[in-house]
Image (cartoon, rainbow, N blue to C red):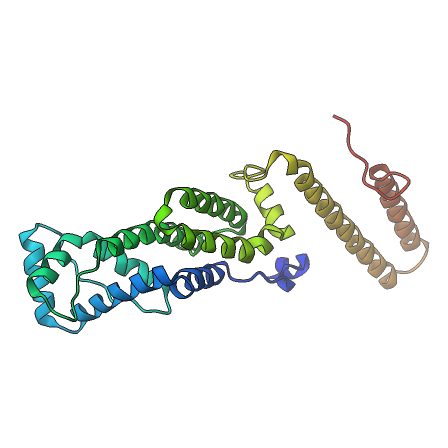
Length: 282
């Protein structure tokens, strides 16, 4: 805690990445995109049928056994938590044959089999949400580091670009998701502390930075280094001044004078006449 206070990191705040991710998915998949939300509603109603009927669950188990499928229960999602909807759709895709056979043989109004188009849409949504779920788990680990945030954003942008080109049936959904994602996460990409953390991480360095931006990112690191050194220098001066105040006589004054002169020479050797950092020659 002492080190955090000294570095002034305790005064900095970064919005929750996972919360921003949830808002993005909730808005662009579950609320605004009618095609996706209507399809999810169909599967949600079917999950509710199994959730409230023990006889329906027993019949489904029997059908699963006949088809030699895993005898997993259908999950009922919670509308406020997007990953529960992902788990629900994932289980439906796994049990597609059993669900279809169950709905055909039972022929109940509250257990209608989704259309083939809805099944295909659900499969594509699972593919999209699977990537978000994997990222959420990685970024929620105790070992997760802020140096991973910008690489995660670049990786997600590449994935959404790929999804726009391949998931043609839900292209509109993915396009809107991509736009909202880019808008929400731009502030993370612009955050200087996150840029520095990524550059200092040996796993990443400048791997996720375009070649044309390499010099700009390096300059950010240089400026932050000089800022830190200047602050460290000021702290040392304060320590010496405190020592002078407590001491007496010419020895203390000479000590302060000697220290100040040495620091001035050090600073002059690193800066040009205009106060700009000198670039070291290789």
